[in-house]
Amino acid sequence: DPDSIKALLEKLRGSEEWQKVTSVDAGSAPEGPGPMAVDPSPLPSVTAPHASAIPSVASLLSQLQQPIPSPGPPPSIPKSDTRPTVPAPTFTPDQDPPPRDPKTLSYVQSLGYLARLSGDAPFIAFLQQLKQEQDELERRLHGEREGIRRKYDEKVRVAKTRATMIGAGISAHEAEMMQRAYRKELDSFDRERVLIAWGALVASQQMALEKRTVPAMFATSAPADLQRQKRVVSILENMMSE
Image 1 (cartoon, one colour):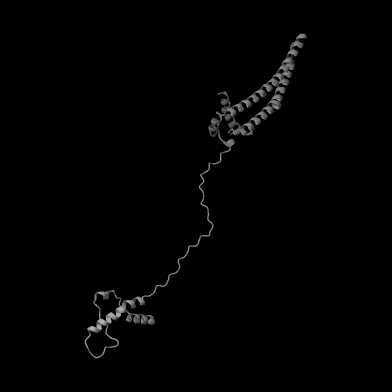
Image 2 (cartoon, rainbow, N blue to C red):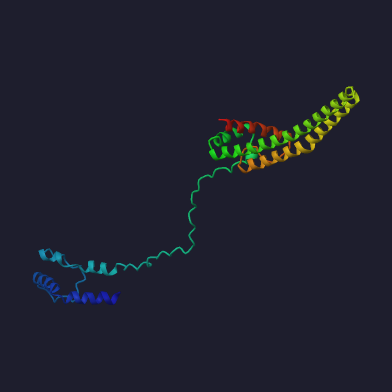
């Protein structure tokens, strides 16, 4: 700024240090025509000890001419992240595979489970109860069948007694007729009484064992399934005998 530089020069010329410098130069100059108002030559360097502390006009001008750094942009304030935070996924251990349906297990696959059941006292008591019910049915059916046999034994005895009374034996025809009647009644009893009662008992046991999650046990009449169940039942019977 020219006005600022001019004012600074006027201030320097009016200062006490400047007057000392100009007085020293005036005293040492030779006599001559009158002094110039402004010396066009550069100012002589001052070698006095105290002159080094006086700033030169050039240094002052250089300081004035240095560009003033413009203020930089204000520091940016980080904006808060307004996005919803997604919770980090929690680690879940691998779950055990679902257990297989016990009734689909093969005989070999059933052995481990049956071994654990062998140490279950309530389960052994449950098996014993099933066995008692089966024994009771077998005794009842056997008694009914024996009743049929005794009935025909009695018929044979009466026929022999009557034949003896008339002095003759039982005829072959009469003996054959009684034999056929006896076999027919036994066949009817086995088919209509024993098989039906036994089938109902087997189905009841199958369902009861299935509720106890015994392997391979469920209500079925398929030959392959029954064969597999028969092998499992043989192990259950051994549990009760131990």
